[in-house]
Image: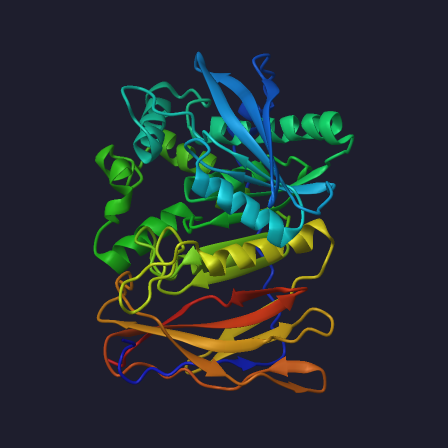
Length: 449
């Protein structure tokens, strides 16, 4: 239940002007040095093709690189939905594991909603390695090896990024050979550490990256985030135990450790990442403090959009009041698909700005031409502390109105009588036959002391 006394709704008014960002020092070159290094082990071949009522699925065997004498091999699926034609820009989703029925279903679902090819790259990272280590334990191991050797090729995020870059090479070659068509751009996306990889792929400056959609990786500006995490949870999240156990969090106060975090923190590369960005987070994600986005949002360059999925954790699947979880993350899939469709087919995304006052959430929308919000609502949650991970979010509808061409809705957010309250506005838009939501940032309100 939301904190007592908390009501939340939106006031949509004149857009605010963002403040000028301060110049940032150039990031280390280790990432681009590694990704751009020639590697003759790169290879790909078409391994299969399957046609169904949903479309055509191609399977490619890919070797992206040899990293510290380890060949990185991947499966790469390309989904062309029924009735769609190849496009100049395609979606590239990177993830771990190997192709499974659920990932194929997700790929075909996104491809159908976008109306364009969607590529799924698997095996990011290549694992298990180094005595059976996987995922964060494997990343932490490579961070420790960097600190011990000062060899800038060790951080696992770098070969993860290179695997995405080599997948782009393979998709382009495949499209020319199979479709007699030129692919020139990609919307790069993925979840968690694969979202981290999406950020860093754009940070390489590769011009083929036309946009990114990082999911559930709400950790940019890492030194600030780690302090905020302790402030919210009382200690680092158990979900990053692999890093705390290896002495990587809190960040050691050494030159090598400070350089490591600048090498792999997407925030350091923010001046380079000017392509459109669609950030999708779960409002109950156990990894990150609820207001983590606020530590870096204002500093991001170029077009940027955000969606919070209430009552959803790291998998973005919503849970109803009885504890039943969605089969697929519908909110996230619809918004991701709409964003990709806008990038690929050069359609405008809705433009939203907002401003938080002491008692109000003020939000402005410059919608797509002739497409005002189809619905608006305010989501609110309450908690005894700043830890909102177990909180239940509830919504209240907002009235969408229009005055002299300005779309707006009216309401108020009141401070809770006790504990903490959180509020965000969410608006629904329509793109062809696809309805999708966008959010504002989250504001945490504290009861008067």
